[in-house]
Length: 187
Image (cartoon, rainbow, N blue to C red; front, side, top):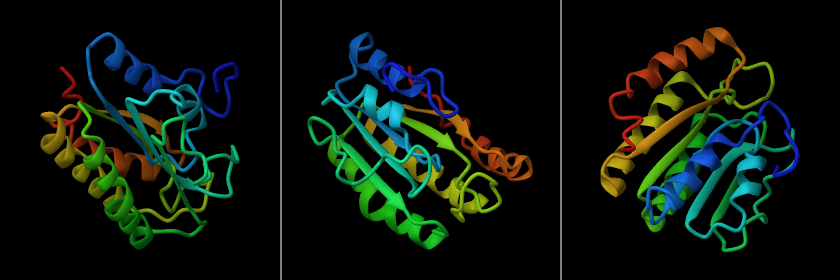
């Protein structure tokens, strides 16, 4: 939130990066995809009035911070909240991304894609009840990199947001790391 540090975030790094890309580096449009298990309420709040920034958050509901309902769409309809029920796994996640997230990115045509890569949606994570697998995180990262190649000359940056089962986090990190040559192409 603008005036309050909440949860595990002191700064809204992804929102700050989006605003800097727009205001300093002349990006016309940016997109943020947040797949952390918790709703990105701070990012949403910071970008609520920013028509040039698409913010997409898939997250478990109900879960802290209790925000991120589909009715929360931003001042310009540029916010897309995609709540997932506890227990949602590969099939639900992949369907949601194929039918909602990827088409929204294509429609927005960003100059930069920012990923809030929260790995706490993994089935073994102790803080929530989603059931994503290591392969799901690799799949979504790969698809986002493919879309960055298609839409914005490969400009994509990934930031670590969450993940609290260290064994799962290590496995996911190595899968995510395989895309490192494609991530952080934001020149």
